[in-house]
Structure formats: structure tokens, C-alpha cells
Image 1 (spheres, rainbow, N blue to C red):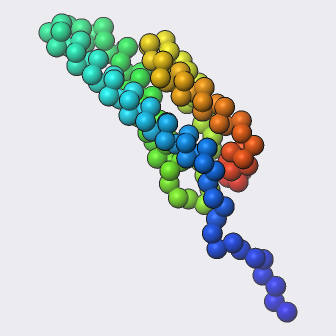
Image 2 (image 1 turned 90 degrees about the vertical axis):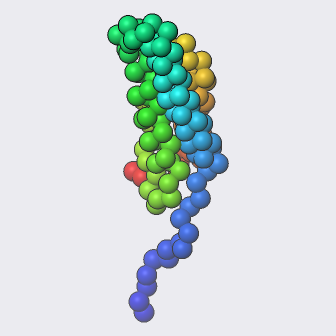
Image 3 (image 1 turned 180 degrees about the vertical axis):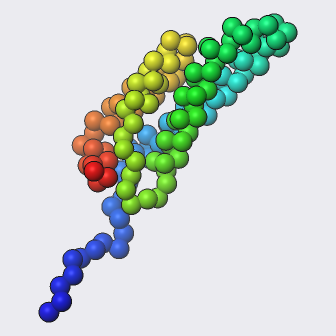
Length: 129
């Protein structure tokens, strides 16, 4: 008799907390991009271009963080059999964004770290290992 292992036609469902993580990371990434571009634009207009030299380091880092957040959230939202690895470093940078007076990123980073410690979420991310 020819025995084959039973394969589930549907892959295991993504936990709701992973979807929540993806949604808040995506929203925070978009917010970081919009805020950094808005602040840069206002400073450049307000100082007739002179403030760009002083403003670029301050607004460049939240913009880069926003791009990485959007990319990671898009990977979490995608329907693949193997999920991406948990990105705790991104959460640490979100928490560090408080240095740029971004309290929303601080909250999102803390929530993300709490979500990563959930047993069901750990089991979901361990499927990729």
C-alpha cells in the first residue's frame, strides 16, 4: 500500500495578533513618512530653504523607519506559507523614535514587543524556522 503523508489543503491560519501587528506597523509607517515629509516641507518653506541643512538629519531617520515599517507590514499581510521572521529590531527603532518626539511610534513599538511574546504568535513565526 502506498502511504503518503496527509497534507492540509489550507495552511494554518494567521493569528489575529499578527494581523493586528501588521496593521499598526503599516499605519505607523505611513504616519512616519507623512509626518517627516510634512515637517521637512514646513521647515524648508519657513526658512526659505536654509533649514534643509538642519532639518535633514532630524526628518530623514523617521522617513527611513517608515519605509522599513511599510515593507515589513506588507510582508506580514502577504499570503505566504512561511511567514517572515519577527522583526524585533524594527520595534526597538520604533521605541527609539521617541528621541524625535514621536510618541505614537513608542506605543507601537511596545505593543509590537508584547505581541511578539504571545505564545500563539511565537508558534506562528516558528513555522519559518
